[in-house]
Length: 490
Image 1 (spheres, rainbow, N blue to C red):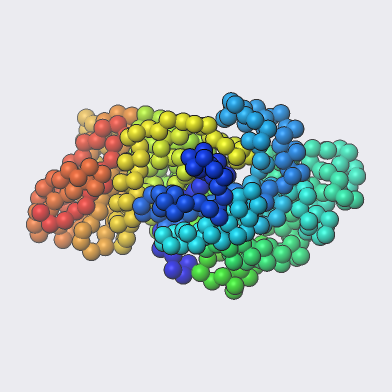
Image 2 (image 1 turned 90 degrees about the vertical axis):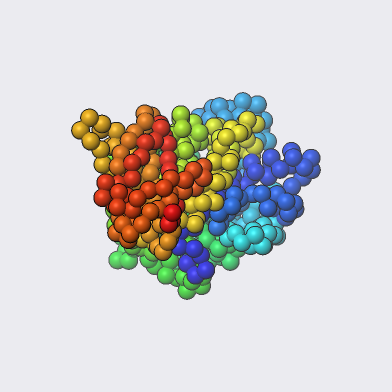
């Protein structure tokens, strides 16, 4: 991670819909090669360290034909885009034909321009890699059949939804172990030595074009998961794991790159140990969206080394829009939590405006939606202040109640300690008001009076240091309310 901040803030852009919006705004064609400077200036909110341009690679014509003929996908497309036109469907960005920027987005030359424009603004570029599968018309399907999971004519006859004829060989369609196969992709064999060597070369070539890579569904390539998914069709598991071998080879060529794993099934620690800098914290997302403060508190009890290498989010292209999934102000409470915890953070284009329509990644255009006028100022202020407090030691704090008031259980609190000023965060993860005492962990506070300035609204409170340490700061928060306090001498 040479040159990267220890807790980077990543802003994800759905590249094709973003450029389609830009074309409407400019009244002219726009690719990555000719985005105006003022658009690059306004793309990412202050406090952002990197932009993830999702979906830049060349999409598969064969995969596009499959998507256009799949009625289930078509229903999802029409639900998101009621005035759907045939040209709106451009294929999945995770059905990759080649790792070259799609010519309709500006091609490799346009990607070079985009990276340079971001770099001028102090922003790094993150791109995708899909290690589990490729498009059915990827050149390797016929050139390197040993890189793929193959079967027999009997397999194809028994389960045509799981296999297809790949130019003379029966090849598996890509999948994970818990869902039916994806109809538009071909399954790579993580146990193949040739595929492992090729993965090093492809990842290194991608990193010639960017500063970091987000690896799609990275846990599928671990020996245990891959063997469980494919059994005898994969062959015997190698002695060495897939990712340590691949990442070691990649780091020899790109030692400063950041590698992010999309990870599920509580495999974050495993993938961190296998070499990834950051792994998705999907478990925190689920708890913030669907569980209570106690579930989140227990999640945050994990060790600091583990937490610092998670990437936290409440929205990305795979999840429902936060404004729809976290109603009634829950989105703001969850955003404050994500922004002020250890680890990297991920924010999604449109999240800051309150977009509610979850757009399938196959589409090149998104529907017009009104901006929630209150959200952009909130998010921009949050991201601007969060970067200045996540330094030094982080500590989860107690929220103490009293016998006739159990609402303290709905509050979460943590502190950041470096030198002065200290910082304190309190979040009410409930739809009712909540009160508590939060003892502060700094004994040095006893020696004076202190001012707590809420960085979200600039309100200030003067308090006695002894009370802050012994009894604790009295907090009374409205439903889904939050404080982000800077603690400084009064």
